[in-house]
Image 1 (cartoon, rainbow, N blue to C red):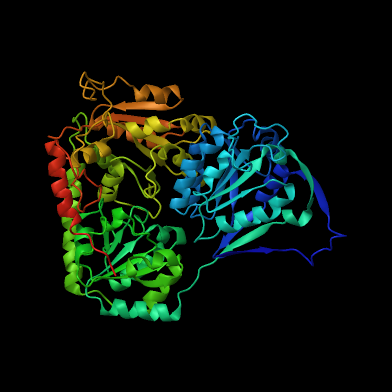
Image 2 (cartoon, rainbow, N blue to C red):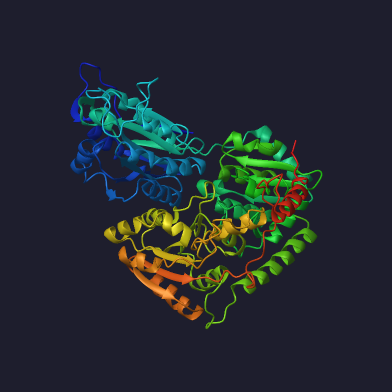
Length: 640
């Protein structure tokens, strides 16, 4: 999906080729500093910076090289290896995958800490370059510190854990191996179909080994990001299906954002008046105030979008993977004759749900499809139906957001309401896990194409704070908010130190609800009775039902160097959020939220999600949950 072009003259012969003697690490850093992407005539640096934590596996190699070439390769000092990957991924997503960061670690725990971040990057199709140190290739002493010994294989190290979560993996055991490996790495990072985590494992002795590198290896290279157009036959079939549909529905996925196809989607919706729902990754593809935008779809979606999905006879997926949250675990699309038309740059995703495939770049495909059905408009009664439903849903959102200034312990939805009053299209909101993604998908009103940044392909707790750093680096001057519950905050607050050190003015909102609110609710619904999901003292019955733990997360954030504002009422919350938005250094807003069952919260889930319930149990809660599960599961269908 991408090609490299260079501005070299006639290739020199082996006898005349100029070389430069560098270590492998020096050569790699110098090479990375000269790689670019280009899309639509605009050029971007591919590897904009490197994150690192140094140990004996990379300090003398890449550490020395990054010092030597510090004027060419910017560097960020991290505190946790997983968090560094999240920061790089946040940067890549904010940059529409046209730029990313590299991450270097030592061997051992430094390398294995990359696995979670790599999985997140690959699942979400977001590019990041991983450069973990590795054990000695020459094996002068075996084993070395932190080496995994595998009796049946001498060439295995802990870095092999990264193979299944990488889109490309190579171990550089000789300096000259770097040349083809580095070129392959850039190809994958710049490929809109194959991109994800790329790993080049670097044995510590090879990093420091010198080699005579051909000068042309360091030529500035531009990797062109293609926009493949749809096949004429597939386009004709897609147009026929659209013309025959009575109740079509577009589902916009993350591919709309990655392709920069927001304007093309708007033009398509303007012309056809077909309603547009969105996945978590696709939310914001249309602004919330666009007449055709009907909000999130699936388990965390709006009632408007889900009712349209249930009655749709043609579902047009644009850049979506159709995860179980989107399809409500294969129970959402219930019209007997429903068909699917999938526009996706990846053939693998275009063929899902036995769809008519339209394999193409999202922007190119939408433009072509709009041209092929020019003059087509959705039935006026259909438009009036979803317009009225959308207005009713907006009233429900208003009711969830409403809060008196003197109210103490607002609900989570009321916290979002206070933020909703404050932000503009410049602000970027980041979230990934817990109950917040559900509330945000249902309730949040997006004001710009890149305001909504919820990572839900891997739903990784701990993503929000480091990702906020990456987003802020990619979008300097814009207010960047990391929305975190107490569970997520405790997972990975360490990069707040990096934010302070580098003066990155992220705004962190900590919602203290004393536990895992999302899983607590799920646990109760599946007969597990909320066991071990609250942050409370353990009682004599071995259950966690005692008093809340006396943990002060606001004090913790302050100890890491942030300015902290505690909000005890809605009025104080509004004031604190406004202060944080105007701040020029890292700032935290801390608020305890109301979680009592007697308090009205956001609308419940508007569609099912399949979490299997115990088939046999002697506790009534589980028996009743299984009965409900069997009823719901009976509605599943396979689309053939």
